[in-house]
Image 1: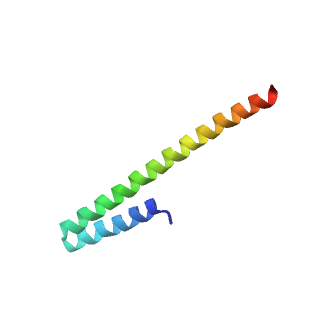
Image 2: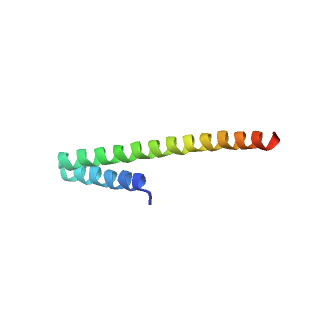
Image 3: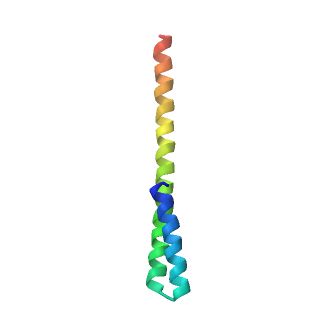
Length: 68
């Protein structure tokens, strides 16, 4: 399991146990961990998109070089 997904799952579990037990600190820690995992996921997605775009540009230039 990727770190971002693990953080989301663990965070949600902490949040729920905090809610059930009435432990606001644990609940808030869980919310923060879950949110951190979601942020990591979005950053990874953006990074993958940028890498794909860069690879596409590199490929386009290498094709142009082959034509010349």
